[in-house]
Length: 343
Ligand SMILES: *[C@@H]1O[C@H](CO)[C@@H](O)[C@H](O)[C@H]1NC(C)=O
Ligand SMILES: *[C@@H]1O[C@H](CO)[C@@H](O)[C@H](O)[C@H]1NC(C)=O
Image (tube, protein in one colour):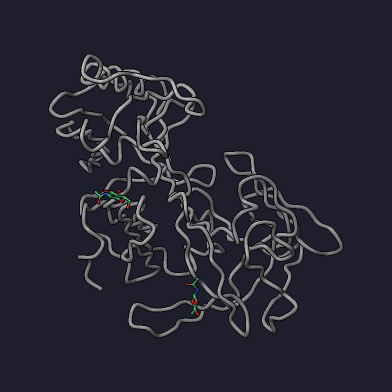
């Protein structure tokens, strides 16, 4: 999207298949699309026009095992999801056929995919056609239905014209590079962070705070760290930059560390920050992953922020192919220009 923070996936739903543009989200598990009016998005799914659409009843296994709040009304299964930013989506749980493009230009159909038909949305998700949740708490969820494997490759998130971003679902998923164990927790995939280094320098973090406690989330932009890792990191960044650059406070940036100046020019030679995940998988944060420019380009801020939780957002995943294997419960990371991935 325009602000470069959300990746939209074009998947068709129904018979006849109607294309939907859903935000790819590894930080939630349900798929839903707007089914009635949608304030700021153009696409709305109309269940009345699909011959394969079916509402789920409250006693269906999908409804009984739903990982979100649900309730019965008029013999239908109502779901409600609340996202991290407190936006919400409410509606009916349903089944319909999903149609995908294959890498060779053909199509694949998956019948009876569970999804939410949103009747009521609040907050930031109102702007979206829908969300493609890729976490899978049980076999009824989409990521499990397509074979327990998927991978995505993200290029430059600031470049909306970049053509090689891709999501691969199923057996063709690219699981290459170093991998790290994952677990699922509260509809998130969580990883273990063992250390952080800035250039050659290892920072001291409290490992107890990071044991299967770092969510990997393609639906969030920033990287979030709890105090015990954020403080040593921000201290080291200040050590490197204060004295050379002028710190400033920006409105809307909260407590973020910001400096006046041109990001490319002034951060030339800034060391790579490495997140060391369990079993030796490393994520290298270069300047584009560690910092973000202000809109007018006259200043830049650190894009890793302090929070009550740990989360690896999409900015940190730039130039990585990230592979999820839900059978082995591992995530692999390979630094690559997505254009070079074999198809
Ligand atoms: C989505 O894919 C369909 C073909 O399956 C295509 O006709 C449509 O233009 C695509 N929409 C966007 C926004 O890319
Ligand atoms: C990423 O894209 C932005 C906007 O097009 C551009 O200014 C920046 O130089 C790009 N970064 C890289 C590393 O190519």
